[in-house]
Length: 206
Length: 206
DNA sequence: GTCTATAAAAGGATAGAC
DNA sequence: GTCTATCCTTTTATAGAC
Image 1 (tube, chains in turn yellow, red, blue, purple):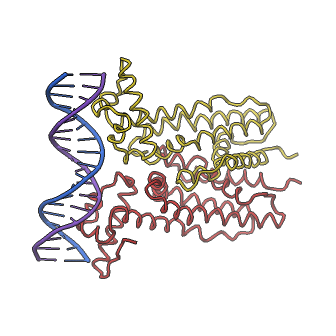
Image 2: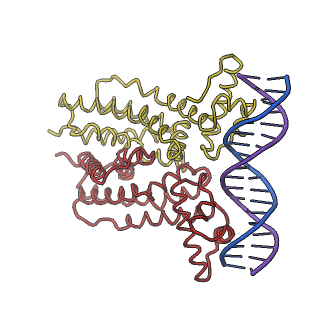
Image 3: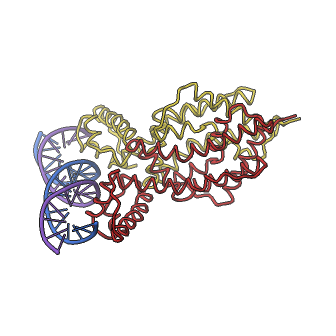
């Protein structure tokens, strides 16, 4: 990468301060509307240090995105181990929505969608390490349950993706548009409804 | 509005030319990255005319968004009149996805999400005249079918929203991120899968 | 009402001292 | 490796002639 991590404690601190400030600024204003002046004002220090550490504005942005993305994905790695499919789907759905609807999750999606043209590889990387992994893990379970004759799913992959979208209801989209920020219980009701619908749709009626 | 429509044929033509050029530019580059120079280069004419007609950059942007939004919503107004719920859902799902996945539809969502902070009322207006109307029309049908004992739906409103999200699969999201642009038959397969899942989920098992 | 020319500001990037 | 000061491009917005 173009970024050159600092080698001494002082540089370490400066780098961390810039990252923290930049995260706040990019999250709040997006890429194009964010100015490095804003970042400097928050972090203190000088423009030159920022350029030395991150190369340019895009390098700083990429560093922020990768950091947020990593933070988001972490909780989804530990797939619930419950035995009952319905409970597993519930737990997974809650973890998924929790990551998506958090302020930094929403900001990540907003800025990634808005700047996908300028940062195509970044968008691809985030997608692959986030939603794609979630869908794959879910599809794996669906396929397994199907093989065990516990459910009837012809296309686990597509079903998994549709389930993940269904979980969002339109809460995620509305939050992206800043129309409103739903409460915890609204989100939970949405997840439960989606799970109920999926379970009804894939259970074997006999 | 700050815009002042032209009163003579020549002004009419200039306004139309600017609108067309601006639409292409905003759709391609978003709001912040679009420059009025690009618009002028495409439309011909002068900067001063643009300012006289639309007030400023934001005024021009709002005019474009309202135009695209109106174009998108039109096809969704004519709800399919078939008798069979499954066929109605299929037709509606196809029309919905057709609007969403069209280049101008994707561009509208991208720019609206990316600039929701700067244009909150615009985002609200588009949401209300688009997805909200679609969800309401669908919920109305679901509620009716439920009353007629043809299906079992406890919360038509939420089910409608979740169905609309499910239809997208993750095709819409991936297209927003410019990861890929699915073919017609992929979209159709996704819609059909969603309809099948919904119908299975809400049909009365007896 | 439209054009040419220009003002005015913002923001990204760098040179050079320490 | 960091700071101060500055350059330079881009872009929004307007003044004034026709």
